[in-house]
Image 1: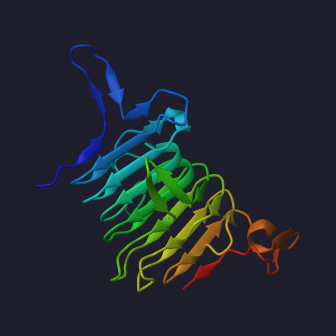
Image 2: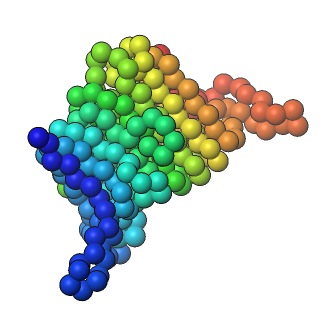
Length: 231
């Protein structure tokens, strides 16, 4: 059978000391966290924090999924990569993998959807941790049905690398939601690709869309850095 890895809180019965989650105590960028599960799933039931968020975190489930086991327990790092064979997070309240990152990259290598909830805004980017690069947010399946949904509860989402849902077949959909911020085109030509593409944001800006606020609401005009998407 498969072997799953749960990030939990454990207490030593001899000393009564408790270790919760995975934490590096330093303050430098070199104090990274890298966890690889070669079989089974990684389930986040306690927070993973690299140097208070100053260093990087890489999670890789090479033959399974990365799952959110408890609401509010985040993967916190400057750069964060999530790589799984068959899915990251799940649909439904409380099931998206929760992150706090400056730059974020995620991918599935065989199939499965990606559901991520970012707490304070992030840039979708190419991220290299411990010599391994993950580029943008992508799902791998060619049969359709792999959704990408990224929600930022505060802050902006900046698109500096591609967001690609499978082969853009039926059900290969993309949703970007900035609940209290903006969605920005961070790098020209980097596209959002899916069968259906939707974005929802708290406010429109000329930076992202060529829109300006007026007394009648947003007034939009073409802009050279308009968000690029294909369907």
